[in-house]
Image (cartoon, rainbow, N blue to C red; front, side, top):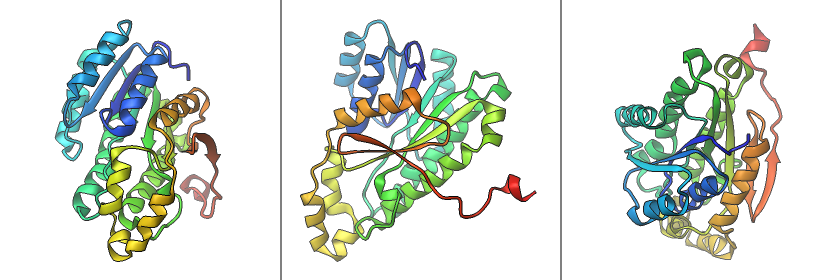
Length: 261
């Protein structure tokens, strides 16, 4: 996808990864960028508005744990920019002691926002199609003892996104879905993981694993995300780790419902 001239919604755009990603979108010449997040980062918002005057940049408050607020936020976005070409679900937390909250933010909210965005973007509803990008994690690819709850939410994100990328959905809606699995990234959330993961609580020695990691910069991740978006096929899954890009493929163990009919 050529990002130049596109309208983008980024959910969680004031987070550690999100801050770099929203600016990367603007560097690639998007027409409009709406940041949906719980709280506004006034300093960053003003910086983006002043630095990229050819693009429309604005903020809509959003509590991703509230489905009604998600629906209202997208209605506001539609009134502001009319159509959406790219929606990025980038909100997330790592605090595994808050089980309900981590599921609500990392998974339930992402599901609601994906489905609501799909309603607006679908060609079947008068939209013009586009791409929904869901942020999973390398922790969602394989079980790891360190982050059983965080990893579970991210694994579910991967399953959900790959399912909505099936051809039967794309042929009707014109909306593609791709999954991004970042590796360890130098953000406040990465540092918080040392005290918020259940595995480390039970086995303190696991903290040495995280401490030994050399996280990639959020800037490198954002730049690689832009590269992926330019060429990624519907349903593809991408690992962005250590400043590198790798596409991941999965074996089909159980056939799709369409093949079983």
